[in-house]
Image 1 (tube, helix red, strand yellow):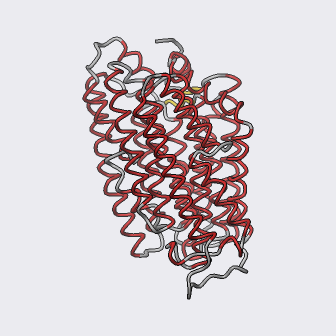
Image 2 (cartoon, rainbow, N blue to C red):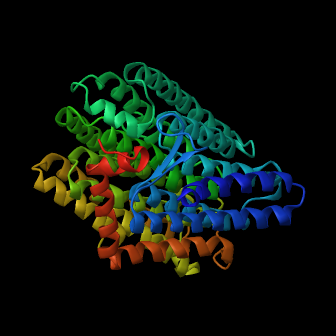
Image 3 (cartoon, rainbow, N blue to C red):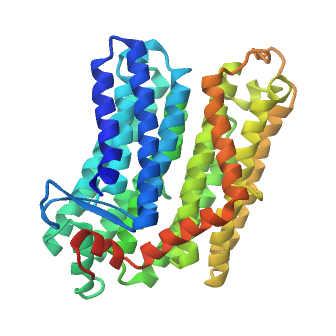
Length: 496
């Protein structure tokens, strides 16, 4: 049991240490980094299989009994997120081997990359709020360093916006932890779930709102998302892809975890708040995307918009809706990582990400054009791709709950998403290159850059074609969220 929960932490930690010591031997460092990323992916598969076969996994580090020691725990949702982190990390590293220059590698790129994956995986399996905070900070420090690595002005500007709002989030999170411990005398989430259910509804309202704002910044929810469109277009392509695929999902995961396990009282008013936040996040993000003329900024604003769909599931809080959120987390991780990688290849060929300076990619590289089109259509929810099934679950749940406003917003945003994806396709891939543009259609993208995008395109197609088993796993995750007794039993050895 301990192995399946500790491997997703030990592998990136040991890989980070090994790449640090091998920084003067570039070939060795790259081999260690690739092996570590592949190992994390295997550990994610192992953990998800363990949770599906044996149920929720829990372990007390050092043998200290809960709630006094450090708890690691994983249900199907957490294990699935670790698997997605492993998949994104492995493919991002493969792309990095063909894209990151030697100067950045000597400056610690590989070490920082694996420390970021360590923070992400730690957040997913953390069983207490303080260690969730610690893993958030590990992720913050490593991602900030990756954002600024290279020292280009645009990177520094984006990194400063990112770290400024992230520090505000961290301060709120830490303040919320102080309030939480002062009120309830524990930070272990399973133990806190037991304590909170014995208290009158509403006693945790203030601290829950503090934590919601802290996590909302990290999840880029309206109106706290302004750091994301400024930060994601700036760094090297694999860093931007991993950030877009993973980092904001950690904030969404934290909201889902705390508001299904801990803050379950006074649910009606909170669900209304979540639905309002979901609708505003969807609409503001997609309107920002439609107004942009830069490929990466369009994709960054869509990262904001898609967070709203995930919050929609939490706001509806039915079995079908939470399954939709779980499936949407997986779908968005895959397609957004793929889109950023393809955009990176296209921008490298053209020397710009501005749609006015790119064109004719389809004629020079039809494979690359297809690799953009597949995740783009999936992002818009076109059947039978993964995005269609995720949105179908959410829309069905919304209609069943009589929430016509959020359903209408979700459908409208899907149409606008398709519009902006069509805009990229028409201007960058289908139309003739602009006069004087420095396009090199004959230049192949390179196998190390192309292979990750191919794998992710195949994954989103497979998730759509073989939707039934994927939805079954998502429904299993929703069942565990709606019945937290299993989580408490796995950690404390007793029920609520």
